[in-house]
Amino acid sequence: MSYVSPEVRPKFETLSIELKNLILERDVQINTIHDLINVLEDIVNEG
Image (cartoon, rainbow, N blue to C red):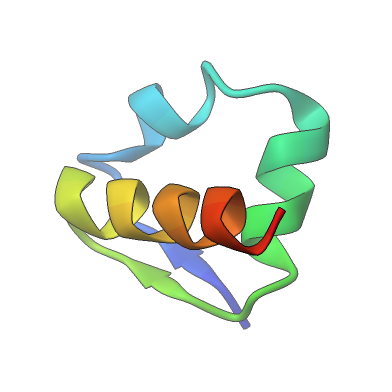
């Protein structure tokens, strides 16, 4: 189950619903903004 820390959640919430769903489907732990950036980079590289 994915987790987004309270510190990162405001940035996470600015993303589109589709992008948020893609991130949450990955079963990731996002504790810092760098974790979020890394997941977004992975999505871009796969696309």
